[in-house]
Image (cartoon, rainbow, N blue to C red; front, side, top):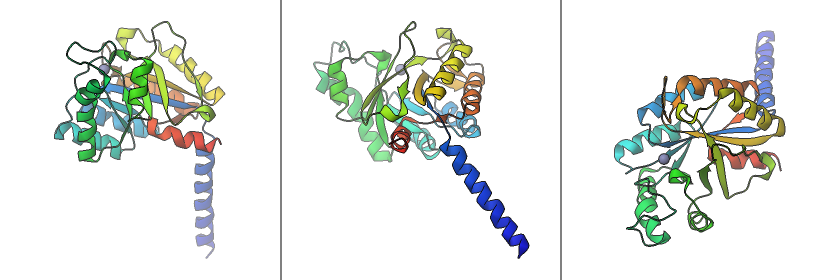
Length: 251
Ligand SMILES: [Zn+2]
């Protein structure tokens, strides 16, 4: 009997410390990855899992059964999915063969949305190819998506969003990470320090994920260093679809 009581006490302490730990989390790191990393993205899930972290993956291209399979695996692992157009065509200025924004939607976005509906993939966000956007493109895309993502220029200051001020529909911007962009990981960590201290969200973006990745991609070693720092700060590390619940907890 005594053993059972001790076991119950241990169990309650375990549950309570888990709740306490989760409730104390401050700020949010949102990592997004663009284009298509295929199985490399799926393999990176092991790293995210290690740090109780989720990301958002913005897929560009024709969503074939093979693509859908990768996206389903990511979705089932708790990550958020977004779209990034069928042919990576800029929304501003419109390509020569696309007359207006409605045509852009039909050619570049709708085929991806239809494929996601067919394969049971939930998408609530869209990332602009090459960060080319305008208030008009935002208005058109907000008819279909809750979150739109663009980039921040190399010399722009980082943007922090208070978690309590997040909206149902938002344009989110973030710095790009990769050797091509000469990313300084110490600077990234300092930005995380600010976001955690302010209970704010900060977003970074990259492309494929693999060991020693060059160019515009995220080396797995960098990803691990960033996640380790954010976990040390006890930040939420979430996909875009989880932002709403973070905001609601603060109301
Ligand atoms: Zn892209």
